[in-house]
Length: 204
Image (cartoon, rainbow, N blue to C red; front, top):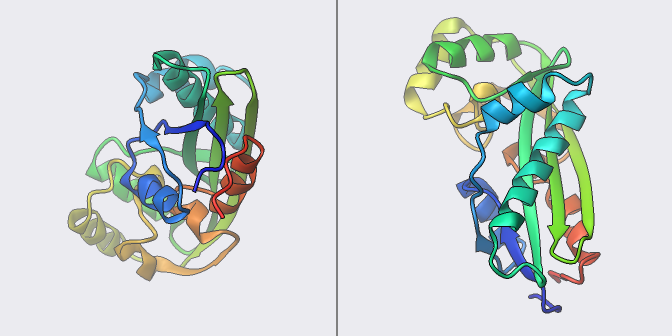
């Protein structure tokens, strides 16, 4: 339950993030900001010499700030923006453009470890901000291109970073993880809950 008079706004259309936030016991509204993520990354982030972790946090912050700008009543609002990236060899694998691109991404992950980074930003109408990230190592078994293509045909992956969802059939590719499972799904639950408490939003 919310113990403060702050409204929590989720700046995301992701059903997975909504499910995780609801599972935390949060009461919240949804406002998906007008933001062309690919354009913002290409024009604002790729030109900077920053790490994948920084890029992910900055994109999460942009989502939160855009949503806050679109709110009619800002003063009592706390907006949560989140961005999740799959990182291999310090290169971010974003959302695939098509099925062939998805298969190519998956083959880059086959038989090796990669990192899943979820950056998040909490911004309030009274000017407070918290920006942080969580990182989880994911170890995948070796699989064939034919297996990757069958997976891509069986699940919609064009809206998923790295072209897979660990909570779906891709779980059969994953040997183990080191870190937060929920972070791989798309929301670093532990860190977000701790950060919300700093805005007076207590979920337990």
